[in-house]
Image 1 (cartoon, helix red, strand yellow):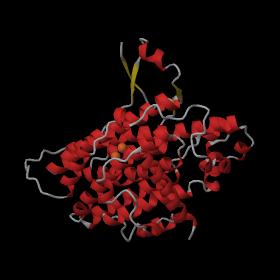
Image 2 (tube, helix red, strand yellow):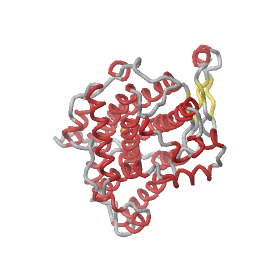
Image 3 (cartoon, rainbow, N blue to C red):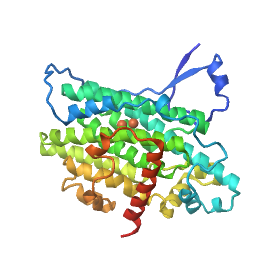
Image 4 (tube, helix red, strand yellow):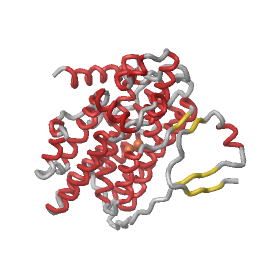
Length: 383
Ligand SMILES: [Fe+2]
Ligand SMILES: [Fe+2]
């Protein structure tokens, strides 16, 4: 019998070696955490179809649908005991000096947990995206935006499915959501204003997701995960493109005060993303660090500098495009050292030609991942 249990938060670290037992036992439980949202939905009776980018994005979504069970080779993956990242991306020793004294076997195990933590955040983030996208169907004011949001729901469902399957079948473990990522999702899910959901989801969280998937695609030693993240990236790029297109026009209709509100909201979300979504679990579990010590070790090591560059290279120009880098928040971004990114050139994926290409083969994805790693090295290390 399925039992449904309400909980105050996500379950802790889980290993799946008993998965068969759990699925067949009588104790299968559906665990859920309740949230409330004052959702203001709308019908729209104007079914006029304008031939614009929103319509093209919707069409593109339908055309480029991929199937996680068919288009990915689920037999071509790394195994427990392998190093889950390419050796040149194995930087844990820069954060935790103790790591350098470990045996190769121990290092591979710690690194496995680090990857599982990151992929678990992807899974939880995708669930959040699925929930927000479903709210957008109700909240989006126009007919075309509603259809588009519906297509995004299905994309997000597919992302939840593939990351979950990867964690279950390949990693064999999962970690709970980081409190900061949870706070970011809550911001979008529980705000009653639809356009703030758009900002939180399509600009901030999707931007974060794109940067995180991009680094995983470059650094993973697993062919399956490289293909998987590549396909997900293609969908996310479409989602961000939609958000920018929609908000660019909509924000022009807002008053100065309303814009300031939204600019603040985006800034607060950026603060969370800048240095709070970190893996403190690893330091605690393997090296006996407190959360504070782990936090300091990560900051000091600078291992996240490239990632931060990659992240804000995407997010800042997009915030600028939709009019949210106002005079009052600019100094705040400057204090965080983020203002320099506002003029970053547009990135690889968010480009019409890129997002409308047919799906690439595994070999093409591998070559592309290596090329992009080179470009990124140049971007952040040769100035
Ligand atoms: Fe997604
Ligand atoms: Fe998405």
